[in-house]
Length: 160
Image 1 (tube, helix red, strand yellow):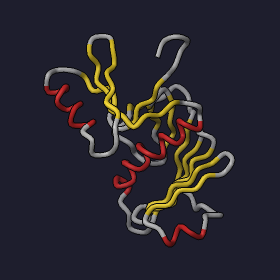
Image 2 (tube, one colour):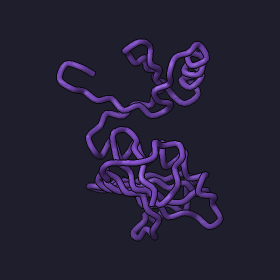
Image 3 (cartoon, rainbow, N blue to C red):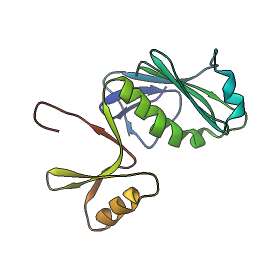
């Protein structure tokens, strides 16, 4: 199975995830496909459904399938028939990875960020507010994009 690195985590994935950096020194998170038992019955009635237990969170998209995130250490995927694996990437690398990082105690922001000098400038807002557009505008002026849509904030003493 391919190994990747993202947000400081080593990721062992059953899916190819070319959006991530290849290779990892350690495994912190495992992504695998498996049947998920004990899903709430309300799933069948909703295009999107979310539930939370003591150490796990479930996310269900009618067109994709169900994702179960446990203790920030594993993401289990049960797809619906006929879904292309690449169609799973936005949900997996967006909401599901954000939930896993939150379960690991990280502060997650719905934000995009660019690097200006030795600083990060973040654009925070709702979907459609222009975070990605702002990053793209800075990128066209030669600045590096640090993240788009999901931003992890590490607080280390007095530094953020």
